[in-house]
Length: 330
Ligand code: CP
Image (cartoon, rainbow, N blue to C red; front, top):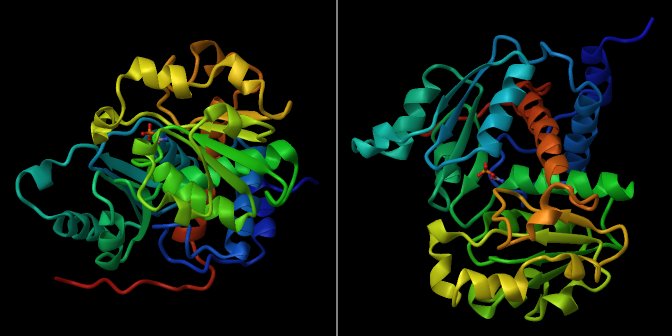
């Protein structure tokens, strides 16, 4: 008789737990943590249409102080797929009325929820909230700092495409608004752990200060950066963070840095075209490449996002070791 999907997940997990109680940054994740997250995510992906009861009687809140399409819907659907009770706060009404992030988070924590999924425009807010609540905090993007689940789903997409366990012989070229990108913040940390060669291509004004300290190779000519790359990763020019003030015009930016068919052809034959979304068609990437081109993995990234978030919600909300957090009260 074949095993139930739940039992297959439990068998794959084999009593393992993450070394962290929150996911604020990819920095503290160990090699074992990364392996565990991906082992479980792949197994969830195998049972895409099955509804699991692994997190039954547990609840979570999406606390989104900044807009989101992919991350919020993905966490919400992932929680529901695990039979969690989920609710979402997508406007910061309490904060607009003068309440602090910490008071808002502690209010939600009083429901004994197992997870708060937090997105803010300010760097560091998720970490601050995590210290003050008992629930596991999963950083869904904090300002310019990090977006750890995005980097994890991106790494899973790349490893599975090349059927490898690390990125030691892989060149990842990241093109675009590096300066304002929390996706870059998590990607550079995680991909360096996985051994990738990371190239960045951007106008000097869209690079962070001291970009040379990040363990990346810097290119100002996108075509040089794309040569033989295994991954072409485009980032959006983030107008909401003032990026337009760092480039002459979007048209000129696109002409110099936008990913076109001709530019993609400079990369390795099997190269993946990736983007965290939302894509600005014909600015970051030529429209014809976004979803229709066989090298585009942009929608595959979204699919893998669900699997990675299910994995994290199960691991962080349902620990075998019984570890809990102490919440600091203000
Ligand atoms: N990639 C990403 O974070 O997209 P959303 O802003 O739609 O969540």
